Image (cartoon, rainbow, N blue to C red; front, side, top):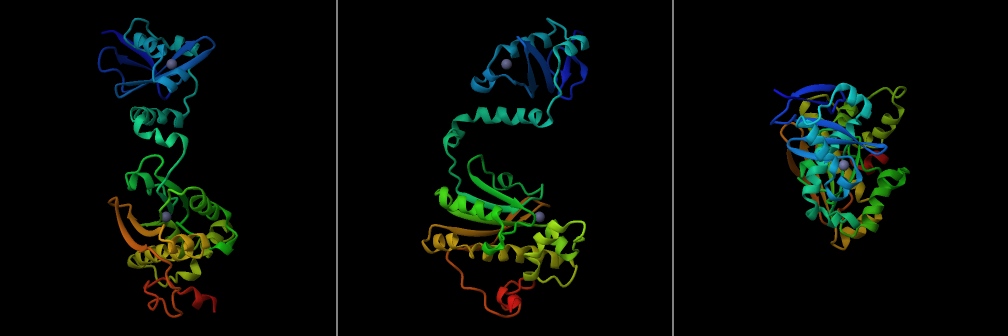
Amino acid sequence: MMMCRVATASGSAENYAERPPLPLDTTISVRDGDTVYRVHHYLGRWSCSCESFRRIGACWHIEVALKRCRGAEELTPASVAEAGVPDENPYVARNVAFRQRFQANIQTLRPTFDQQKPHTLWIGCSDSRVVPELIVDAGPGELFVHRNIGNIVPLPQSGDDCLSSVLSYALHHLPSVRDIVVCGHIDCGAMKALLNPPSAEAEPGLVRWLAQIGPFLAPTSNGRAYLRALIEANVHLQLQNLQQYEAVRERLRSGSLTLYGLLYDVRDGSLQELARVHDVEPTPPVGSAQDVGYEPALVSRQRRQS
Ligand SMILES: [Zn+2]
Ligand SMILES: [Zn+2]
């Protein structure tokens, strides 16, 4: 059997049977003048790192690579070394499959090339399991995303320019934005940190960050049910915080904005609605956590400030 010796995505030389199937995930370097391009074969599709492939999805490097792979020109470890297989960047390598899907759907995606027109500002947690576009099956151009520890909306007077600039851009420069989502999630590390605070000496930034919600969410126990209540109360609190921004209130009054409070379950991928706000809500009354309706965790802001 003829063998095709190629460089795998990890950069090492391996032997593969020549005729179908071709190796699942293979990178072959092809020299063109002074430049070495990486030709990638993945699940029956070919791609190349050259400009021609990026622009029109075709180039002659792929034919050369295929020819080599078919055994017309065996690629030895020496020739691989000579061609100078560059250290594969792991992110660029993993981009290949996405880029192929992207280019296969380029007609659908073209409207997003010139100008973004997202329908939603999504405020979510940085947790790696809570991926906004995956959760709501959205494509490029749909969600304008801000993520931070604990999906927190700092108050306007807090001096936080990160969230406020995202909010400002969404509401002043993206007229397509009609919804703002605050999405909390099950097993949120930020909410756990409220129950078991980190050391202020070791993590001063994190402690300061959480301090802006801690006083309004009153943890009293460590139970699992309590953590769930805390996560939900935090979403409600951030919806309230959003309404402290004049731009949000204006858009709510004009009926051109809806706020959603959502809860994502990392265990089963389900999403549920906790709250929907169409108009500026009355300021929660002074009273106990139970009185303001977010039992058991959300404490009225006035009460805490008094
Ligand atoms: Zn090419
Ligand atoms: Zn989280």
